[in-house]
Image 1 (tube, rainbow, N blue to C red):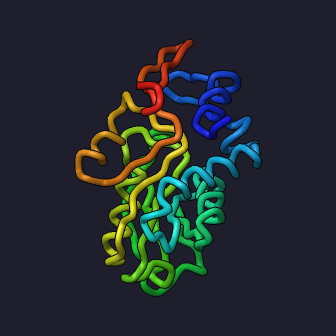
Image 2 (cartoon, rainbow, N blue to C red):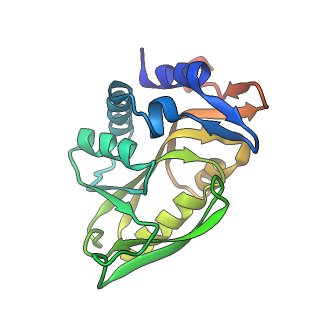
Length: 198
């Protein structure tokens, strides 16, 4: 089964819809991880961006790290992740941005060492979820501050009804989501048709 269909099936069979339009997929994607599914997702992301000359994958801690690793492994490039909390081993030239987390209802100062993103890098941003686009916009700002090139953004699950992905696409940014949810109620969800369905 192709990764997109497999992911949609897992969302339907194991995903839990929580109040506030929150989709819980902890049983296979971001707490307990189905490694074979993740490998296939990483391979699909690599296929979608194989012509973009990606040199590094960038994500944000912590639930984005696993899928970013899978994509980076398939692309054969390093993965870098933005930290949400400053630590003693993060010093020197620090690239920062502010990100509001819809899930946690909290604003984070995210940061990456400038040693890890250079001007000659082509960065692919990868994350597990895309809703309003706050995390991606913060990561894009970090790429811009580094003077690097943005290849685009790859997402496991996009909440299409919250508009973040379409706003990024309207700016000319390449956004590829493996599953896009167009509608979600308290007890059901509906996926956006894939190009092969149309």
